[in-house]
Amino acid sequence: MLLSSRVKGISDSITMKLNEKAIQLTEEGKVIYNLSGGQLPIKPSQEFIEKIHHQLNFLKSYQYSPSAGFPALRKKLMNHFIKERKLPSEIFENDWDVCLSNGSKHTLYNVLGTLIDPGDEVILLAPYWVSYPEMVKFWGGIPTVVKSNVYDAFVPAIDDIKKAMSPRTKVLIINSPNNPSGVHYSEAWMRDFAAFMHEHPDLVVISDEVYSDITYFDPKPSYFYQIDHSLLPRTIMVQAISKTLAATGLRLGWAIAPSSVVAGMGKIQSQTTSGPNSLIQRALLDFDFNYLEGFLIPVKNHIRQNAATLREKFREAGLGHCWYQSSSAFYYMIDFSRTPMFKRFSPEDDHSYAIADELLNDQGITVVPGSDFGIPNSARISLVIEEVPFQEAIVKIVKYLSRN
Image (tube, rainbow, N blue to C red):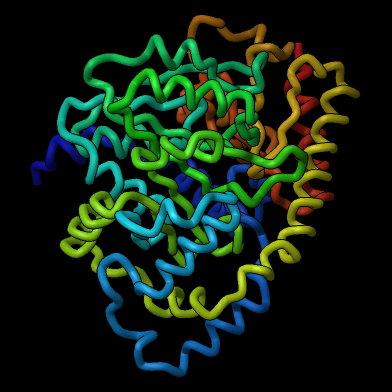
């Protein structure tokens, strides 16, 4: 059967494929250190589980919600966002809304579908989340990549973003805290970005803030629209319960956006998936967000400890020059090109997949090739597995990287 050119032009999600392979090898009895996972290895908070259990008793939990989600929950999420970001509530009294979708990935897909026409350019800041370019291409857009490097802790330069702009640029995606680098952009960076936006009054910015609550070093993330409220009308904020509530499998994300964008997203959703999961929506409507801070304290402590283990093992092995300080989300990018091991590879080519394959076959460690994040000769590791196996995995990685 002849498949469409649209499908042929899209790659599989490498993170999903690697996670599936790690699970398969584990089930075969092999000892695998899975550092590819983008999810916390814990259940959601007990309070949220109890709210889900309570909502099982009601008929509406099993029936359609409106395409954009239940209005009461949309209002609650808007109010929570305004409070968390310390924004004036009067800004959002008119012409603003929330669209709930089946996870942040679905939300981003619908946002891009609402904004992008074929030939429109979308700026992506590398390292970027693996699905961004594939989503852009699916809707007929053209990804334009702005690169960064480990010397700057993978924070892109505003001057490089300026150089990437063209008359066809319509959208720019910011992901802070960032997957895969595990850093968030500073307030000074956000201030400079706000000034840059004023130079390009037609540019729309999608701010992917899924990891905004997962920060384990101060200062906490801040955003350009907090510095300059006038930029909000051309900003779309994306969030989800997947990371904050350790609920990747429950698939609930949302966009906070001008009403016209939400209406467009609702149209796409009404003809594809209909409304998101009613049971989870109703449980979240009944959930007290004040529980989140206490729930995340041990999560942040655990990630901080694993990040410290990574730092110390790199320094002990004389690889301190390859290290940078992660501060948020739960990832870290290893730059292979600066390690002794890389001497056997040609520096002009990308060897991310070959190195990741060696780590899996020889060391039993699953990492995600950095080329899928726009950074060649690197890999993303996750900092979420238990402390002891994480230490064991890092010792193996460091030993591998130190080979001449």
